[in-house]
Image (cartoon, rainbow, N blue to C red; front, side):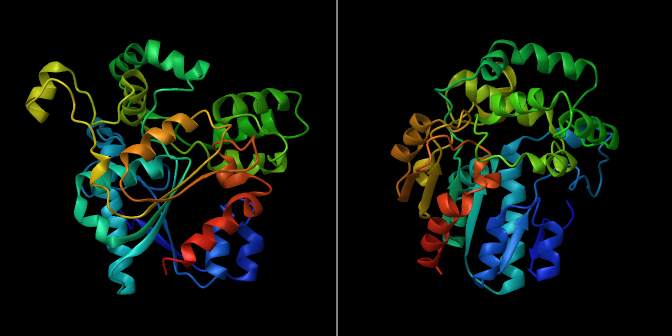
Length: 325
């Protein structure tokens, strides 16, 4: 993996150039005097390097968020700490960024001492409730879809390409006849919130998202949907015995997480349902904050893109972070 982190510094010119397509949390924290490091997981368009393997090799894609958590995330943390001379840092994760933090701290407990605070936006661990039509489709057909794609030699999903970007731009821009169709698809995945979504962002969004992921990552998530458990990858009865010495994959023991954890969730988030967040909270041992965003339509991506995210979320987050300097 190439440099897992980029150090983020803010200037007025740079703000004007890129603040349309980066989470504003970065700028607010940088302006508050924090040294901000931006992580990136393997397998997307910005992280396809490997010392031995090529993305054309199926072996390159044999990872899920478990490997990201066990290998990539600690590499990022150590990289930042080594370069700053600090002994610990504050971690902010969104969606899969929360999943990986829980896995790391459960499987490699020594990293609890390296995280002063874990801020979780839209926590994703236990998936027992709130299944959308798309999620139910994955539960019913996930194994078949995965096997079909593997048989076709497809191990990467949603790769970024100029053709796809141009197509999405033409279909989803504000003047397109299909603009509302794009919004409906977007809201079906992440939760409907037209009031907080700035549609002028669409050209920027489709330029960076989707950016690619491994088939195994998606498969690991639908396994969680199917089982309702937060556990390691299920390779099937025979291979599970070879890897885990048991028929079922072992569960992640989040009770081993001793670092302070702050949970922020939206009540209109189909990927981080409130009752599942409460299940996670019940199992964690050091929850210092559990906050339902006051705006009732707050969805999964409002944590990043909501017009009023500063007022609804970031101000409270930064106030909490100040307590763990």
